[in-house]
Image (cartoon, rainbow, N blue to C red; front, side, top):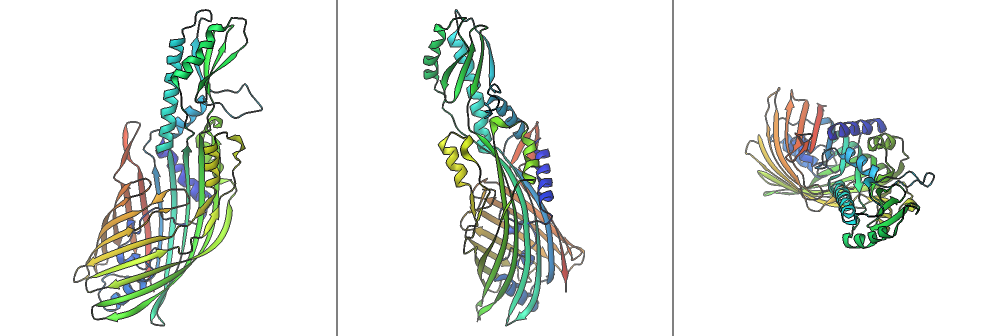
Length: 477
């Protein structure tokens, strides 16, 4: 079930955006070897000058300088089976916000009671059981209830390898991403207070009208004294939030050596970035949902708010005989963007209302990255480490702080000039770990895959919680 929905979610991404864009939700080491990454749009801004000089000094085997194009897609989801079925089941239990039809209630049928001799203890036991089941289901949806998909592309060019003593590159990056997640309004079912309130049943007679008794925590017991039928309803503001983003980045990068020393060289780079970002979101109280899967269809046709922005990335790289150490500061200006406003009037819980208002804006947060590579004497092997010093939140609200290790082998072979393997862990947000494997084939084709080490049981079968695939081409000129 989850697998079908995240695949459908990818389709939504493609349909609402004919090109793609990239987010900071995957580490750069998921694809390409370290030399190729140095010329991609994800590179440390100072890396192109360093890698081009290494190639010109015949120290980088198999490096192709020219145009690189990469197309990728990925999915990830929470550790929960049948997410959308659980949401739909919860929706049936929660009262809908439907003022046009006040009789359209959710809830549970608790059976019949003998109104002249009611068993209050048994009734409370039934009510408490249903409250505990709903509370557990909503808590699970709140913790693990998400499914997300993204598609991305990266088109980069080496424009001039000797401009004012440096290297000029440019590129276009684009991403489409969407995500559905549950936002939970917690409730506190007080069993002792509920039992006290249920004492009112003893005063009912078969001639009384339908009566509602407050069981605390938003739960109510509705009794028809004339028939003895009992049902329990609940008022709750939990909702399903569906978000989508379209982000295009246009970059130009200049890098050069600013210090040459017998012990090594220091390179500096700057990358101005122009952003074109469109954001949208829709929300539905879980009690109002009829079919949660249809919300992905709705997000395609929702209104996007577009805004342009400008930022800059800065980078330094120190290269020694058999290593390089770099640092980059991304999105120095932290440009800010806005989602469409949501109407909070249908909600009663002040915490839920405040959360909706806080979620209206998205800022591209500043991030510091450290990268290190050890190179074998003939440069065939490279062992790299990439570290996000601080976490960063992307448009879907997910936090990422990657630490990634990779081993790369490159050779002058035509049919298999490159192999790579890596391990990455997100130390913020999902806490997921990935293993990746890739190859360069026939000197022009790049293929990379990555999957999580974490798994989830879906209908008795085990599936990885996230997967990523990249297909790329490199063309020299």
